[in-house]
Image 1 (cartoon, helix red, strand yellow):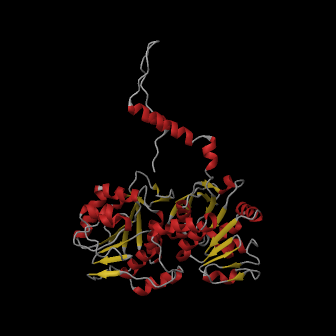
Image 2 (cartoon, one colour):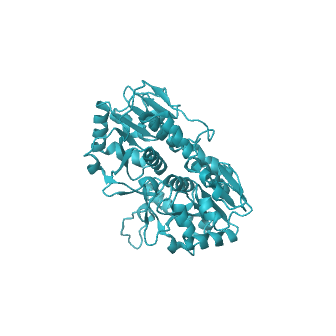
Image 3 (cartoon, helix red, strand yellow):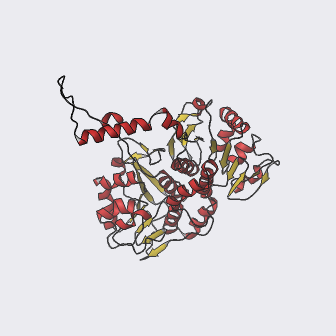
Length: 442
């Protein structure tokens, strides 16, 4: 909820009063005075002492970090209210080149946080990012001191084996990691094939396809089950993890446009970072040419949970190309930015008129496509709280809906299914299934 700064809460006009005059205040003045008094009371030391400080979390990133694992963890923990520091382990470089051409900007350099205390340190996977973590003495010392104090620590994908295992921090514990790294876990570790494994203060997990479950379990470990349920609900997570995925298809048509489809993914301030990252990452894994375009006046955008993503090009430069598919991630701020961009909306209208492919997820079908007539005569879905904005709600209950040249989906928890459905349509079911298995989604 937005709050006004105190300086703007009470604009007072100076009224001259004589020595014997009485002060008469209007009802508006008195209401403003009450507002200011309450605001000051709530910011008093006593009031502030009663509200607990947010849990502090460290998520390091490096060149070659798996972006889905990093971004999902950051996003989910920030949804829970955690103060998450995203720190680059690359010397002197706040921007990292994560896997699959995804560029992320850290909040800080790891060296500048070396003396800070955290409630949780969580290592994303990816190679060579995980081996960079292993070789970073600052990070190793931070994690070891953190573990000695009995605090919560976690890692996913290659990082349990490459970093925590190498540092001796999994000895005697049950732990899991990416399937092809299981044999790299030290012999002192009780290796298990769980999607997420908790042993004492250590949490480990398998890959991009388990990252959302892993992140919600971290919320539960930090805050309790009630908070985890509160965070998980709005993300539209799968009722059963690891099971087969599907889409609802109407008016089936071939999406085969060749081996290297040209795909545009616009991003803006307020874009949902999990959705954008999963779409970009998975489609690049499938060998599509994905162009990430910023609607802002610079390449870097600040996404809905304050993750800093760096686009490939500005929208004006992206407009020079023709695309086989245009995809809008969600996030309320991002969806509103898309809807207000005449250039982008004109491009999508031309796309639809030419019977080329387009799609949107979460808030974007309702906020960007529907008002511009881009769902007219089409069945689709959106973020559940926005179904009432759709003219045709008959297929809204489906997690992914394909209607001819249009694909829509519901939210962060359906983003992987949405992306895999696109892979199936552009390439084949076999490639989608192969990717799903490689990501430990199924």
